[in-house]
Length: 262
Image (cartoon, rainbow, N blue to C red; front, side, top):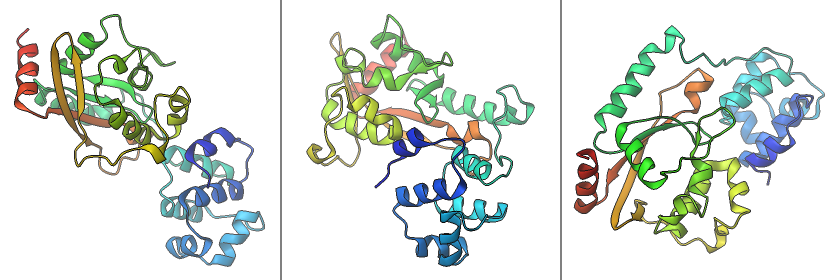
């Protein structure tokens, strides 16, 4: 079965709609009949679309992408391959339309104190962090963190680096496979370095997975919640996740509160 990584690695702007549609359908593990029913068309017509014997309408592209739960960025690729303009754009951070969103993010991050909270995109690039998160990151990586091409902090590179977070993560065998699944298409890059075990070797995950971190005699156990924006229609907003961390026990709470007091 094709994976999301296969889709990214093999994507070519010249690929026709039928090629991309078939890849997404197979990646989702959906039959032609089921997809046709969910998208409100016939299996015959869907077959013609996949083989290039028919061209889709813009409405049909949107319906099929929705039925397959294709990410917004890739819906644009499907539309483009069918000869249509993109449906979703990415606004600039200083766009006035995003002022309310920016205020909401600031509110959420500030209210999380003295516990950490971060805003990340789908590649786990750090976009924002509250003071508590900055304190912990500075404590764990005093020499700085790796950066992505756009200058943002590349949390994925640090998390899966045995010389990064791996130096202090006490339950790596539980945490890294879980994080690799969350990271999705980029996970094989880190797995190739031996940071993540094969899925067949993974032990069952506990009901709530914690990050067990220890350095210089300080130990903190954290669990997290993830918040997303409801029905975002902007590519940048669609990608972001707000991850809020909480102490898993009273000892961890005391450490975080002590850090907040300096």
